[in-house]
Image 1: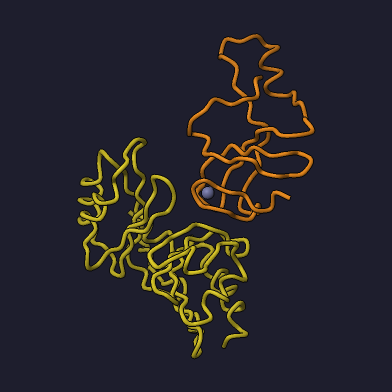
Image 2: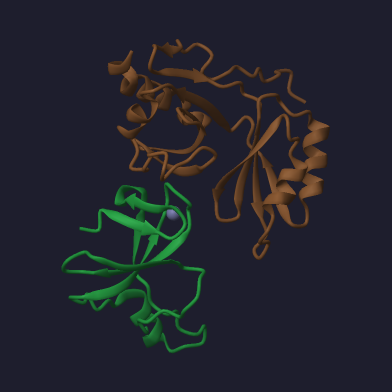
Length: 92
Length: 177
Ligand SMILES: [Zn+2]
């Protein structure tokens, strides 16, 4: 269970300190089709396996994080500050 | 201008000090708390903040990436606050939180045991040495904890939550008093 979240700024903290926002998806370009925006805003894959989601360390550093979590085992493979580094994997 | 002058009343002024041989809970003076927010990209700002804080009277406490508290026992005169804010710019911005946040001290052999009832933070001295700060939950209340001595912690909490947090801490300390 992802009850301890490895925040890159704060270390391992209980999940109660966090707010979960949901799937971390790449935002479409402002001028993208309505269908792309509909997809981005409303449609989710609900994968069984590893995916990336936004967590906010609300009662800690108050940074947005991108957590790589396995939806079946809840194992956390990685956790990084959303402002850092690589592009999101999940396309819209 | 209003005829009524706001009266500053220490929020924990009426609380009874919780004290025993192994644990002591005490409100700290409502002096100065300045929240410093660094501009993005300002990397090595800590020595700069240290040079602005008066060494003998103020301490600089890390809060989170790009955020610090400058704390002091004495209230900072308005002019001094203004010149501090001016000196921080453009690298950082200061916000006076002296009336917005309250400091509580918990110390003694059992202080970390009592605190551990409320927070998931690892308070072992190897993981949380003297001088280290962290923002965490104590029960349901977000608070900033600094280890200020081997057996002493300073807690900074929003003023509106200070009384509730104090009562919680007092209850958590009961078995050691
Ligand atoms: Zn954090």
